[in-house]
Image (cartoon, rainbow, N blue to C red; front, side, top):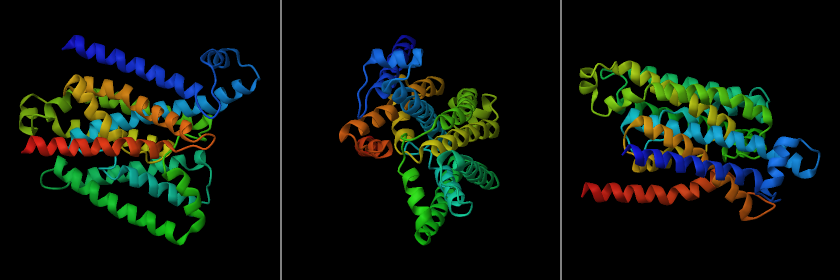
Length: 331
């Protein structure tokens, strides 16, 4: 089993390397791999150098960070709620980030992505903290059921507020819709630099909680019998999921299906051990997002299909297969 897992991890790393190279080389203007390497190392002034360094490198870095964050957050959300259909939306974090962005645009008049990033992260953090605090005050504590119910209720409420604001404010809607579709295009270098620390911190906390999540999968009583502090494990996993989702959504918009599909694929490849699932998801998440972004560039050049649209198109069949498989197992 260890040999198989190591092989899967190596293949996933190779696939990610190919996706990164494709993200740097392909688009409305294809650039040879040799020119890409030259642009990264020589810092010349040709058109290819400018395209690679100024446009595609920041875009690729954001894709790496956001894809990894969404995939790892999906693993954590599914473990916390014990729900195979859970994704980063389940704790209201995505809608909290959306509300933060809407308030930044409508109340403070911010229009550029770097200017309202912090509002997106703050909204995600407040929404996630509220859901966890509310669940922790119930009789069963922050159990999978209470987390899922509280998160779903808050997500619906915040989404209603967002829609209400957009309905009465056309200018806010015009700015918000380009962010809400989910995309890696037009991300300046400061966005890539800003999002990385949040993702690194979230990933480290996630791996620190991995063994505890393995114990929680056996049930709370068994986990306590194994010496795990159930509340502490859940809190650590929730904090990591909030950090990761907030940073990814604020930087790239609410991109769907990465956090749902990748954890299932990772578990199918390496089993239910959360350390291995997290490691493989960390590689497959950005691979999927960067691949979707590249496909969106190549469909109808020089126009682009946003990465969020492509992941939805790829993820919808996966979700149908997952539901069908679940029904088959149940019968």
